[in-house]
Image 1 (cartoon, chains in turn blue, yellow):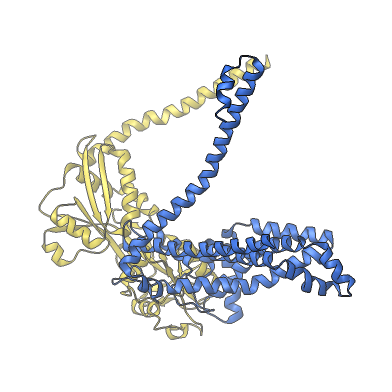
Image 2 (tube, each protein chain N blue to C red):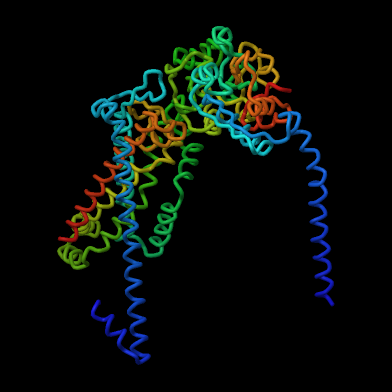
Length: 308
Length: 289
């Protein structure tokens, strides 16, 4: 690159001049793209550093053990307590529940779309799934609050339907699109020869899909599940509207608070520099670590798929 | 020809627009200066007013400060949300011109040289689902419901249904006021903690066994506001003190030391009945009427 510059300067013919200009433009653009690429890296670094810096003081003050394993959260009480075990467990249970309802439906839909469905039927379902992915989470929350929560109250004879169960159902619906589309892509990438060989050996279609296609696409399907977990654990708005937000230890028909909603519901009132506000940042740090863990898991799954 | 007439027409319209603008402005400017001058003594003041205290008064004080700025742009009013106790203390030791308290001053504080001026009253309505047969509860019953000691409506004269107590998140001014008045701070057993008044109203409206608290101004037709000890909540019953679940918003000032000119102007501005709608917008009942 550097050797070109004196040459371009020496040349006098318009053609060479033009080429020099183009080269300059080319290099300028390269730098521009590089800077754009840096933006994402810079933000990730900034957020990581910021969370660590603002999240650690409260953990130090409260004590790591009391913070992570304390079962009581009373941030504005006279003698405040900052135990986030209820939030951690709620997030874990809630996500597990969403998987319990969402994964079977999503996985079977993906098999249906990739292998069994008539192309026209598949097109309609695929459009519906894409639309489901595009609905803003606040709309899920609103409908959950006005339809699902009263329905759960009536169905289970509770005094209030805003429960962990309601949050699980909402999350299960919200993660369907990512599970379906990623698993479908994985299933479609299975080489036709595998299936043809199986069919030729006398297996039925369903046997072939579940004994041959699904195992061949297993790492892709696992990646879809992990992606769903990531989406479920990071969701705040929708579950804030259906889960009731009381910092109870989780139980299926009790009002609960997730890691995300714990931050969102108290941030607006926590005064600047107070232990309460710092503790909210510490919760954010814990949540961030969870998400990181899930991302690492996802990356290893995808890498394994590539190595195959 | 058409073009010219269109041009003339639009020009005429523009002139009409300007004329319409000019007229009220001309009548407004003389009427504004006499309104400003009796409040402060002189038309334009400069200086700084320090207020300090109750976090629940944030909305009211914020609205007052913002509006006061348009009347007296030379005066800076600061507000430090520290808590009623700190605010009263600050007024006493002189670090604040006006101390803000969301409770009546204690006798000891009055004897210590402070005067209280109630600028507004904050009424909290206890709302239930319209289908609920209960019409009237005492403060004690409400407190016991909040603590979870009463868990079924049949215990307070309603049908056999479990009570769902719906409140606000920690830190909310309404929650603070409710728990303070009913003396249930830190011991409430909630079945939902929602992050806005609107969410509480919606949840109560859709849950037959629900009871919740919202500021008086947010009660609408979808929920039923209960009488408390026989008194229905309204601006009138909050103002005359018969409705029990309410608290005063108080300015604490030194009894024997006059306020600075700027502070006096802010004080008069807050007490001016012309600014009543600022209070209404913040969801409280103004004391000056």
